[in-house]
Image (cartoon, rainbow, N blue to C red; front, side, top):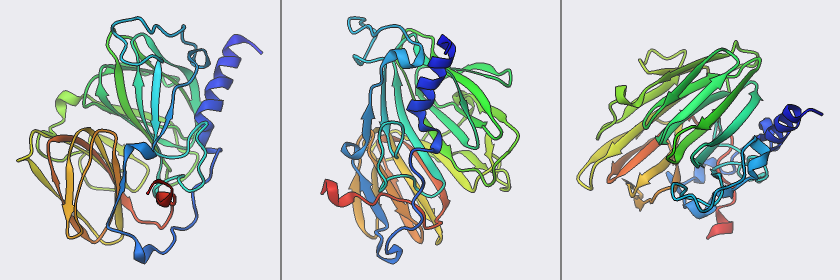
Length: 304
């Protein structure tokens, strides 16, 4: 095998390509589900892979610009790569949510994807993307990008700057396989999410006007709540559900059930037929979708 082939194989092994664990077919006792199921960050899997697997140089633990000893620190919300948990494979169409912290001058070498709607939200630093469709661009804080992997696409993601890069990457199951590959993005400076919901992503079948359109019944919103006086309403219709991420800060979710405070990296599963209130301070991300009865964590008792 050539060096390039070995690199690609290492990346494929790490990424799992959806094959490691299949989504759950049923969610037990849906009628008994809580309207909010809190996921503290201790429930997330943490991965710090070998830099050589992705074509990187050795780590630089003495570099003052580095905020972590390893080039990459990933927090997996669902089964991914070496983290295999049959009770935590997906939340509806949301198959992957990885919270990645990449140190300066490091990144993911070229690797392939197929049949996934891949959405990336930049939290900190600049993400440089390059792909087999001829796209190359760098995106900063608050920016959103997507790839319809479809029949197949090869891309790379790097932090070419001298400051750390943090981004949230989500893989959603497309409405059908074999779609034509596509790419799109919007810079964060053009998205208004200050003390309001910024609607970033919607379905191609939706009439909503959003920067990103994907082949999937899902909506993605971001919001930056400046302080504890800033609040947002969230009304989830019956038959819908949402995955909520505390990107930064310490937001609080409240409703008829009471209230739940979150800190950075915490998450929550929200069920439809309920009105929620989100209170700052905090930077939040919300993935809303049809409640199809598939997935949702089944291992809460292991952490109680």
